[in-house]
Amino acid sequence: MRLILLGPPGAGKGTQAKMLKEKFNIPQISTGDILRKAVSNGTELGEKAEAYMGDGGLVPDEVVVDLIKEKIKEDECARGFILDGFPRTIVQAQKLGETLEAMKLKIDAVIDIEVDPEELIVRLTGRRSCSDCGAMFHDETRPPEQAGVCDHCGHKLFQRTDDNKETILKRLAVYENETAPLKDYYRKQGNLKTLVGRGSVDEIFSQVLALVT
Ligand code: AMP
View (tube, rainbow, N blue to C red):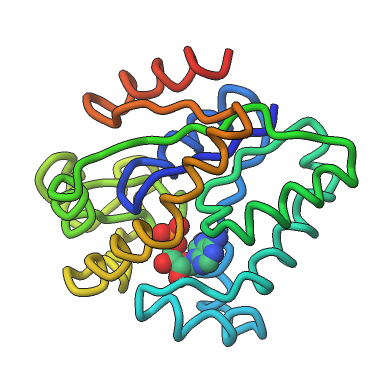
């Protein structure tokens, strides 16, 4: 199964992608996670991406496209994959389409998770992630049992540097201008499936499953 998770920052793409990964035993490919790791490891990729990410803008298309092209050719992606945070522009979607066509593969579904912008700001400003297992918490709606510590693995929680109000507003604007047009792009291809990201994580996951199975 080859899926794309589409939706603004804070819609819950990462959370749903992790659940899909467990359920179908296929890799989650999060360009945001790959880029953040590259930045923290100080690699060449990280150096290229850091300034754009800190500012809430998009990393240039060619950088992420090259990364994804390599990734989806890896053996672990042979049975499928979940793209989380890619594509984010029409150019990225076109390049992905060309790459898959050359591999004689296609995307099965594009899941678009819709959430109101006011709700996204609340979610993102309070968001905390585990530095080790990636589990997500929220200061108000999903606090960990012990402040700053992951309930699952005991590692430290951190706040993303781009989860501050100013950068969040920029990221939401970038989403509207650059990424939201992908909804039409995939609707025309006939594989866009939209759901409203309201309710518990499990309720949303049931909706996602109903759309892909
Ligand atoms: P995310 O974790 O998906 O919110 O991504 C964090 C940041 O990484 C974004 O604000 C962008 O700067 C960068 N990024 C992630 N995915 C992409 C992509 N497909 N194209 C361009 N930039 C990206």
